[in-house]
Image (cartoon, rainbow, N blue to C red; front, side):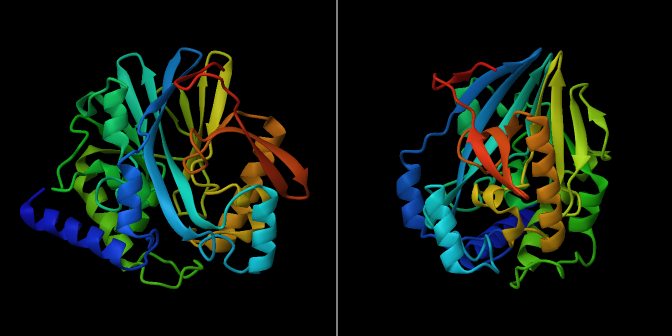
Length: 334
């Protein structure tokens, strides 16, 4: 990337911290920096069939409070009551950044790249986590992009605008690429009323940088002989979840269907991050219902580390998150 583009990316990231945007937060830099000094960047190993898998920590996204980002149209009293019932705090909320790595033969396949080092120091830990797992960034062969929000593609470039994963091929849905790189991305169905232009420019800059390395997929495609894609639009137009399979085992990654346990308990309360608020709710209900019925093991980008567990149904379109139980800090047996 030339110096002009690198400076543009730097300016965009700075402005995204300074003012609210699609995924911009206001918790003080000092609080995040202090916490990051003792960060727990790291990894968790597990095996599924013939696949060696790692969950890698990219840190967390800080929210000053659960509202108005989550449940923007719901009374504070109702939100506070439900949060108390599930033992969650309403202030200084942290959304996990859980990154999946698939080892398959000579391929190392990364699912998204996290938020990168352009923003708060509470995130951007992925390179450290990879290093702790004994994996160099140059060893990553493939990067599957679920969607192009900054906490999913920000880790593609470093602060100088240079590709971090120099040998990787990138995979993204055509709908997602076209939305962020188009002339006028439509946010009219979003509940967020602020300026989306900085987020659009940031995502577009990164996608244009990797354009010649992109392979486009469609919903239902099977990639790498182990990953089946499924469009789950609403969060973004091309937001994609997927099932991972090997031998007689499988799991489902629900990506950003939910960002917090509250949206499992009350999926209809919605989140401002969804480009289409109402469609996001409909998709969330549909996916959670399906997951509860199938009893699949689930992975999630933003639920508490390591974002692994199951969904059970508790009522009419209401559900509960059951975290996966495991006894050793570095390895899970499925």
